Image 1: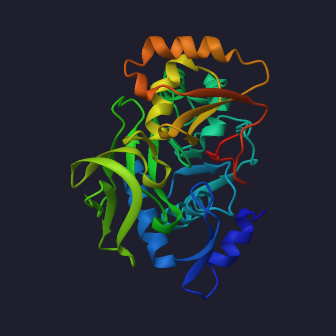
Image 2: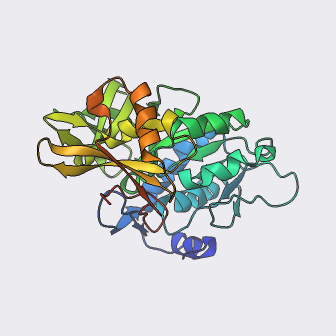
Length: 316
């Protein structure tokens, strides 16, 4: 596992690019090369948004093998500020003392750790959640604990996020970073326009509701859509819909084959003693459209995850 010093050695060499790995949550993990010029451009935009300058302090509990960790180092380099390398763990541990942190990036598996430590809220100015969409319940708990929180949209290929949503916004509307514009194709898949970056224009496989050239609401991955009797359902939307009935539990939604409908909705919940009948009853009280209910609910001792902790939506 790469350390901060490993990354800084690569960042300081003469090559115009940095080696990075995709997470594998939406396909086979792969190594890609990112131009340092693109990474600097992304870092400057984030620093401007969060007001990060020479006197700021950043902290990262994320692996420097992946883009989120790498970009925290680049942001610190661009701002000329300090970056604290925290233990890479689902439990966030800040160093002793009263040192204020201007920006702390986390992934959803680390979110509960902050909820359990409301005393950290006074020390952390902004929390940035990336990697996967956090549940509305988790965001509400984080906000209630006093954390100012943002949700990111981006990918390795875009050098981290190109849009941010305020976690307090229940509509979860993403707003473009400076210099970024959005469009969609005929299938409502997001197109990222980034004139200042080398890729300039990037076609994604994410289905969105485009509100303006600078704002959108994310619906889910086109390649993960469930086609049930001709109705297209997105696992990510269903997971948010089911959240009130599954508070405090880890779960995901995916497709499985169905002899009549082609595909049907499968809900997988982590745990050994799960009362699936009780959960099905709770879901029926909050989901008005029966077509959006899971056809089957199963319990799994552990959810399948990628190397950096993202849930892999596969039938079990």
